[in-house]
Length: 430
Image (cartoon, rainbow, N blue to C red; front, side, top):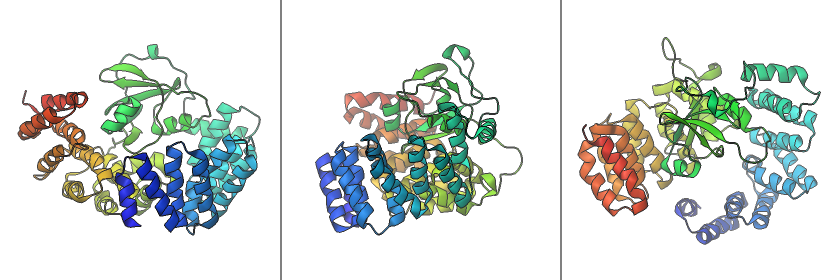
């Protein structure tokens, strides 16, 4: 099974991915969740639903099933089969994982059964000791529905998340560089897909001002139809991005300036919770904790390095990807992380090597092994642009890489060469 999982992680051809995922499903009903995901990504919805249903019926890992059947619930709901959608969502909620409860709460909300939705969000608060999702629900209900329910709760939640209220803005309201907003860190591939760039600062989404990542997350869940344009500070000017991207590997959003504090570095993360809590939240991608992870790892800093390096060795590539994001949250990580990141770059999964290069680029030449390890990746066509971007971030400290960058530029496709030229401009001494 491990060999099949590794093959799937590196395969690009849709037919090969589908065949590999089918073999995994044939061997274990738990892996039918993987097949369902692959088929859904390829637009083969009826086949995907059948694969997910097999997992619902036969898989032994009930928490895994509960956490991953959101697509199936949405599929049935979109097709008008609300009874099947509720059957699957109720199964997920009965497992009592946070994600399972979320799936049921979301379905109740979409069906207009708001008291039941609030009850499931309340269950999450009581079981998992946070109220992020409950507050978002109240804010969203006030905005989307505006009905008579939850008046006091919606008032309190809106005041906490948006102290000055929801503010409508337009591009002409901005001229100077922002002092608050949502900072963007993105891989080259994500930048190409989304229109967002490394170092951008989001100041508005769908016409609403955002000053924190918590505000961005709340507005992002409003049940609007169509695209949600962003207003972004980009390279000294305000520009509009057509649509707010979904959460995805290689994209990190943090509150602009969130790392600034006075006095000693906190020994714990947000809400007074210890390092072990935040490492577990990162590993499991606990939905309600996701908005707090950037602040948590920025605060924990060097204390989190050993734990994140351990997660980089986890056999699950998704956990490895989250570990790299943990390092990126530190903006940049401490120099003590460099040897472990270099080791992971040399021996780790191909899925995480690109993001690791981004992290090393943000750190600079903090260790003798960093630049040689990054330069070596210029030989890999799949990683060359990542490596060039990382060397560019290091500036003249990486000037010894100029010959290797020039060779990589010359053999790269024409469309990719500007990235190498940009890196060369940045590493050449002024």
